[in-house]
Length: 372
Image (cartoon, rainbow, N blue to C red; front, side, top):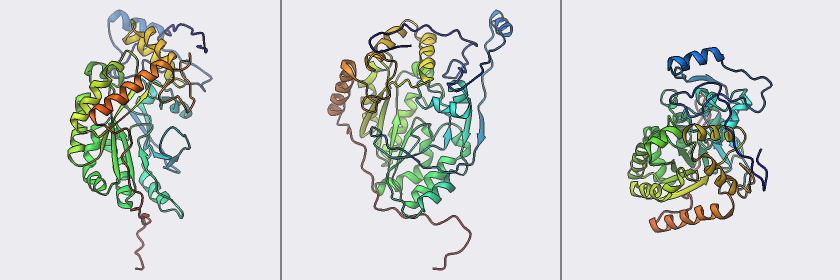
């Protein structure tokens, strides 16, 4: 365990099974609440190794839960919003660095492969949203869609839960901010364009790297970097305010691309830019360090040394003042580069202003006719 002032070297854990093709996590590490651990049969794995065979790809499983509420509120001073909607638990994009992975522990599932293969969907999300927006005394503020897990991940193409949520928000003329890596957001342009004309929506497209090969390793089932840039262009040309989210900044991996990513996004039509540095809370830490050992072993020690330098000697520090941007000289260098590049490119560092004065509480979803 790393402590302030003294850093213990990282020794990769012994893998209990070979990496799965097309998945971000290396394996299903036990979550922090588990009381028992299971290991794959060693003889079977040895046989696979002798035969040169890879384990079969894991399929994605979706279960459904009836949500008792859908608006999630927070009072975190560093987020810039106080409410969010996440239609799905877990995310098939499989981004190895995802700070939401530890939430799967509360479901008694692993933040590793379970997080990206065992998803939970909320099919009654739109119904609950309509009820909560129509509650007496509800005061509209910008709601963020996909603040934790991506609302436009692949399963949305079939389930269309996000689509139903956007329909409710559009009908209620409620301000909406979307954060996504998914090009599927283009499907909902028929709803987003009228909302944008009224100043009710903005979209942040997360672009971590322009390197296709690196993207396939970091975020194996997300849209390719080129496809995300096309999404920025499509949204911008349709009149939807679009910004680029360069996140997370990982020292010596995607950090050298900072200026190139911002330039490509501006050229595609982005009007603003944001960034956060790598966060390694709870189980994300061993998962990411194992990923380094698997994919970039010669850079692993150097990367983690810089991460700790930005975290006061720790692998991670959850302090509100520093968790998003880090601290120290290296964090300042990243901040200065980002600010100067945005200024040179004419990219705003402020979120697009969205209106709250057009809100109309939605009518109850009932077959009963109105008396008026």
